Length: 397
Image (cartoon, rainbow, N blue to C red):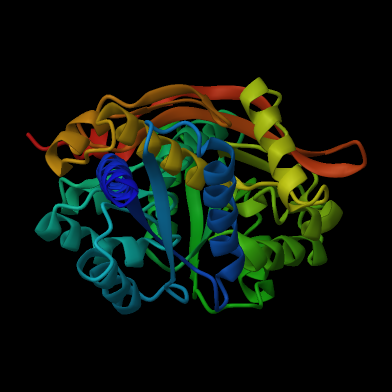
């Protein structure tokens, strides 16, 4: 009898284990970012944003459901590597979502794969305007350069008459330049010169000297954040351009929060239009910054890429909750088009159902000293829930 009862009990336990495993669901999320090479600092921001969200929100999933991130290093702006990693994540690791990606060329290489495999791809940073057009399974929570640069051009035309542009020579740089020029010219401004800087450049003195010699009222600059932004800022200071009255403006990449302290007082007074500042006083942002500093160190500020990662994971978690852990790609993409939140660190955001791109507020910011440290202080909101202007101007008829 004892042996019989033990057998029955063992069978019952086995059945319970099978039932528990059947009800449990693991959602694999492939995260492609940059952990090595010159762009490692940018990739680190994405990594920190993803991991902080996962740590603080693991309990906000349906019962029995968990998220398993699978991290991969694309080594920088390397489309071939990014495509290969995405293929491996889809075929070998069988991920149900892709996310991350610092660089536009990498995201552009990945996008077509998502259409073939029907794997939703939530871009956390790469800003090239046309990427979502490559696949119906792509959505973006970050930004496009047109969203900041076009309204900045409109604003600058009210203050200045003559502008010079200096941008990095790759797609986002071209798009930032085009957006600013369109807005500036529409407002009656004149572009007196332009320069495009190789992505490998470390010496910005020759380019900034050209600007100084041309004597514009305002310099519009773009580079992909990090050390290049600091190098260009210091060239501006070393040549004494501020003293000549040339105002320095650009999208938020040129004074990104995590790099700002390295720029020193040269950055004081620089004006940017951007969707995020670590200094913003919105309650959601204050909570985010406090959590970030607690996790990674009081001296570290989150930049916009960390926020992009946070919001990408928030969207993925919402999609998992909406489907109770049973992910269907086509249903997922329909749900993506309904996503909105007022609780992002950057303020309210909405996914545009027409383009699957983010719509968000853009803020005019000035670099000032706050509590002895440099900060991007938001002065005014220059646009509310801005739709990507490039897609408005290039809408298919």
